[in-house]
Length: 97
Image (cartoon, rainbow, N blue to C red):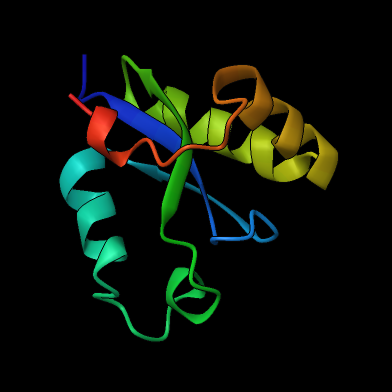
């Protein structure tokens, strides 16, 4: 079996812009985004630095499939997904183990 993966949703301080991504290392991958490591990225441009949703998978392929499913949905489906896990829209970065 390959390396596991994570799918995540980030938003800005107003919870009005959503970015869905996938990574094999949530803590270090998300840490780079939080410090605007990639200055011309979507997350930097729209200030999406708040992690509001993440889910782990046994394989990166499963995480990629879930990312595609989420991205294929509409805005309300993303909001519902976040509300189901994180109804207060807290920044979950510190909860990453």
